[in-house]
Amino acid sequence: MLIYLVIFLLSSQPAGSLPKHVPDFIPHFLEYFALALFFIQVFPKPGRWSCLASALLALAVMGLLDEWHQLSVPGRFFSLLDWLYDMVGALAGLAALRILGKRLNKNSASGLAHRLKFLLLHW
Image 1 (cartoon, rainbow, N blue to C red):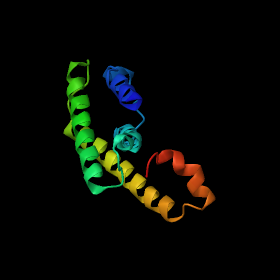
Image 2 (cartoon, rainbow, N blue to C red):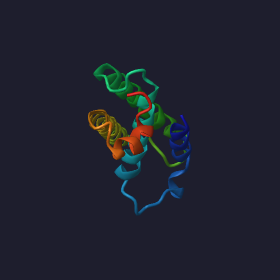
Image 3 (cartoon, helix red, strand yellow):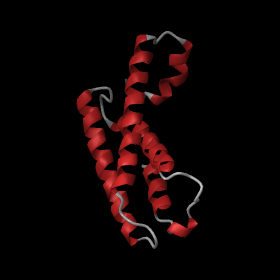
């Protein structure tokens, strides 16, 4: 929820205070990539397709709420394209975690698995 709070605070910034040299898709993608990595951990079996689908649906709603919130911020607006960037980031985060989880479970004796196990709290 801390990551979502940071996203909310960044979305609360007026348009004039945002950096102009950063393409819009980069922060949206990175925010929701990170959010997806940690959000999926609240599910009891995060590697299951049903959990991934539920997480994606919840992240989609969170992205829509964030875009809706921007309607009240000076110079900001609701953008379905921004929401699409959010969803691409969320999908990439969920896919990365699923792939990483499968590889770590397959190679659980490796040193890499032990170092990255903190990302997979209960796989």
